[in-house]
Length: 334
Image 1 (cartoon, helix red, strand yellow):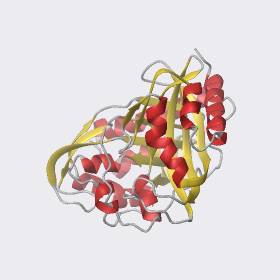
Image 2 (image 1 turned 180 degrees about the vertical axis):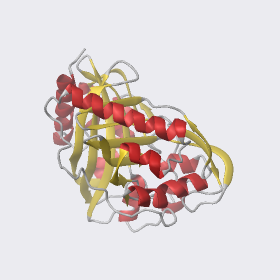
Image 3 (image 1 turned 180 degrees about the horizontal axis):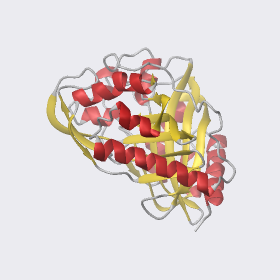
Image 4 (image 1 turned 60 degrees about the vertical axis):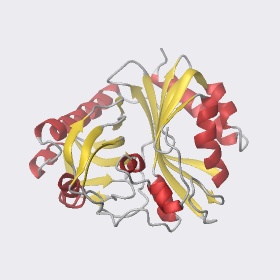
């Protein structure tokens, strides 16, 4: 099996080939870097795609045509074994940037710079990318285009920055002890959240694993917040007040390297809309959240958290097709 550094090298070579490929060349690049049986989990409307051609046709070709001069601008790059299963996963988080010159998913172009926040995961095996997961904030692009797809959010509506310390690109090997400290802290925080407090997390519990001046970088539709007290006021209280019967479904990946780590699930949570969340009405329909959490540890506590939630999928299960409602173009579901 590859070392962590070898897995990083495979993905970095893939990124370079992807960025220098012709506009419709994503399929050829994927075929070169992926193994047999390759598939991708993506946010709605991409969902689950099988094979390089399907991934290129649904995801990469339309995005590269829409955002002229597409650049990958990474904020975090790391790799580590999966705590839950065999295999090394490489994580890249940041923004795709380009000139928004053609429509994308029915979102009208602006002719201006657009930023697509993303987090993607690649499992490397046998020198090839065996599977991928791709999360991105489509609602953020809709807002940048002047659309109003959702009610006012409870947190700040901003393009979330990278780490305060600007040290998230872990190109070199990291200390194994520091990596384990990060993973242990993240999992202890998760246990507190899920098992002890049922997603309530009063101040005393959060303070066990978070700095008081924590930064919580939420997705468009929810927003960002700062400090434990404002996080609870601007996200956690609305989350708990508006949702019911929350069932933790586990994760696909949990890993950490250096002071960075995180997870994704498919889905992480199964729940009911309850009395209403994100300004939307109550519903007794069962729905689910596919969530990414990436963390930065500082000392013995967590300092920053970046979150991606597939809100389009969550809302579609409630009967609200945000893409169709906002753009007038129907997107198929896999």
